[in-house]
Image 1 (spheres, rainbow, N blue to C red):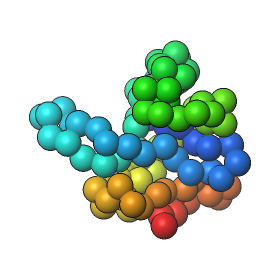
Image 2: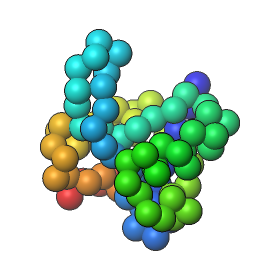
Image 3: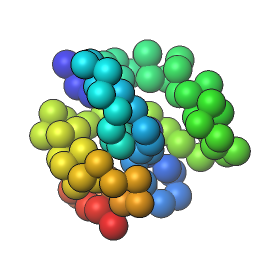
Image 4: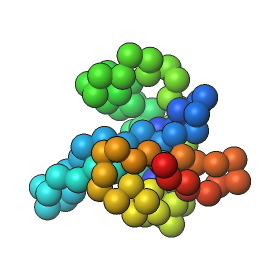
Amino acid sequence: MMPYALKNKETSELFSCALENIHGIPYHGVKLWEDREAAEAAAPSFLVERGVDDPWRWEVVGLDEHQAKLCNVKLNNNPNRRVFLTEEGRIDAQ
């Protein structure tokens, strides 16, 4: 199973926001879905609910398990940090 996230088509930023883990504990991380169909169905309303004015700028992308975990490690639960998926498949943070 491959996790799916939302990537900005222009900047390559992966969409991160306030989330809750399976234990109900809040954290800042990259929103992931378990399959492409679920991601594509949920993404437009998910983005609008979070105040995104241009949901069409975001596309569903597949990540491997390592990339998905690395996103949240690099975000370090900090809403001021952003993560990007490079063309080479690296996860970079700012």
